[in-house]
Image 1 (tube, one colour):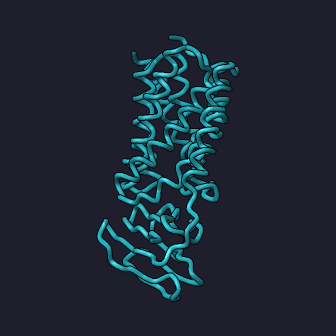
Image 2: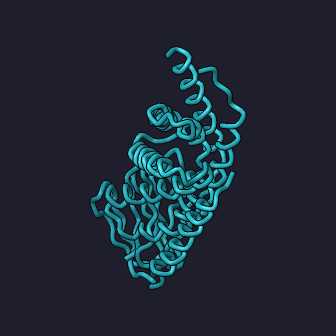
Image 3: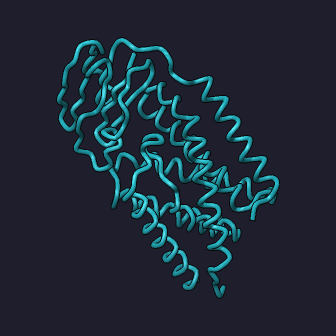
Length: 162
Length: 104
């Protein structure tokens, strides 16, 4: 248990570093708030290895901390909504055993952005936001493929003794 | 690393996105910029008259038929980096300050 907890903590720390690096450069020219989503690699690694509880734990900790450190508290709802719904979707898709990390992450990225738009529609009551949906779906899929490839190699090279 | 199902899934998402894009793209020019703070409508400004509105943390500018966020004191500056808006339904949102600028 102690080894596992340490591993989770290390992954959460790694995810936080990814979050920080992502906050340094903006992809806002694509659509407001677009990010690579590299921070999700930590949770992806646990998901690939079938540890869904750990994935949710690491991702929730990462989102809470990165929002407090690098963003405004009002954006917490958006980050949590996107992060948890995409992880839930990826978990369900992983149960089919049809998809690799790349496919899972691509779907996760698209789901993440779709969920954020839904939270934004509900939160701001601005129907015009739906215009962002197609561009955000494509951005989420492309970024998801990239994070999927990173997760694949993380899974290959990070060894654990438990 | 990549399976056949992955490619089908990714292609499906991209196809749906492109279809949605053509269904949803805003084309009609709007007449007014509506500024709301915390879901309360504060200003309704015609787009054909240039002006500058100072809110507590944000400055909204209307110039040459377009509205944009001139400055904001929020940490992420997503609203300031947003392109100017002029089509019906387009919006600029500053989440940290609860400011919404929407073209109607």
